[in-house]
Length: 305
Image (cartoon, rainbow, N blue to C red; front, side, top):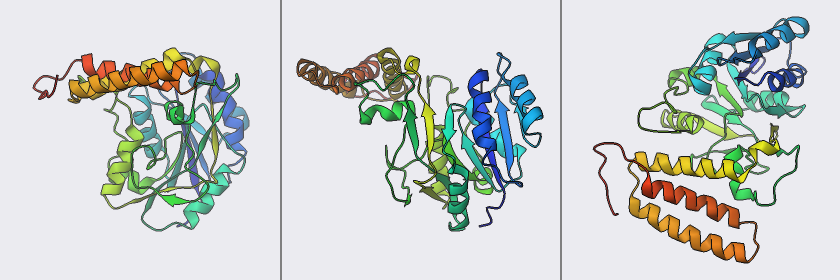
């Protein structure tokens, strides 16, 4: 397809300094026909005004639009509506693209099939305060670090390996609009707390409609991960929320009990052996406990314990 014109879109909320610092490395990659849209999702810290001032002084062709509520999915949908570019390349406000990121996406879209709807690249961790020893590779998905290898592959929506993530994702605008865009209700459904996965859910709908989803290893970006995001408390909270969602969706208490018991045994053994994998076992125990004890939706059939 013709990838002569691309749009870069960045949703943001209450990260004024982080968002402003993201603009220069993006603008440096834009061609004369490319578009830049920043969507402010109801910031209260002056992000919208700061971004508008930066663009006015340094890149008047770019623009910031206000999406007062609805979360990141609503912000991404606003970007799809705001631009007319055929391809929209999404970055998160704390993700920094490699210098050749946009050009690699342009090449990938130029050589893709007409049924390609989405191309995403690796998002590597950038650790200003260092990476904790206990943060093993199998936990990196929690902080949106993704590396599916060195080869371009078509993705099949398998758990853990079959998706790319929204922090470094480019979409054929036509395909995204055809299937209804991102689902802004995820994360705000009554009785379903902490629901995530809107990027994966969109990719499943695209695949069901006959569109292709690809991983492009050369379109690399880096996720800024300051120490305050890399605490065991934050990870335990993440896993408890996963267990709570599993419970509300009707997960069996028996499965929670089995997961809890197995994780406790594994965690104790790995702790005695001083293995860094012990932390992951304790996190899994937190998820099992939440699945065992969490509330269920009314009228959800219960099995097991």
